Length: 291
Image: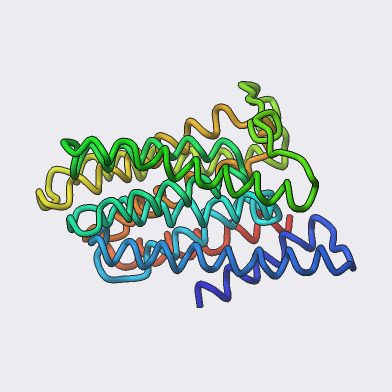
């Protein structure tokens, strides 16, 4: 049901932007909805596997709601692609706590971040999560600190092989590195202000509840809960430096925010109030997309 809800809102976002009748657009749109739903499934798997939330669908529900209020992200294939690989990287970092195949997981995570940075350069900032994982789970082995560099170098090497084969040219640094901007004037436009406002309110409210309930969590889960906090901080950093601020960069904040926001819905309070909150979350995206 959540996947159908996401697919419907994804279609409306593309319709509002303006549909194009050509093979490339249709292919990217189909791949985009696949990546969009895949990110939701990967989030659900990580949340359950690492005991970040209780058994339930609140996390994927919040993910669907929060992403749907960012229509520019839903129509940006590069953001959807980068977000999936960032999520896969974080998944590998969270799995470090079982202390099995640590080097393989670090390599996988760094390669995923490298691929994500090819689609959206500033997602390379999430490499900090890989190093936070090393710091928390096995910092004494010096090889673990070098593996992420090997992973990034591997991606860059294959990118060069691809461009040499297809374009007979090297994949240069100037082509790879993106600019940065600290201007937020685009957020003041009528079409974006509502989305930014809702995300900001959710961050302040959900994060407050999360920090208040943090001390009640089991001691063995606190390292990965801290990684979730680092995740949203780095995502905020990506938003700050993003060159073209059209709210699509906020998409990187949604995964950790959905995990953090689940804490609120798992509290014991009035079922009626919880039901009202859920219906409000369901209807708000339609208000943004249709009005």
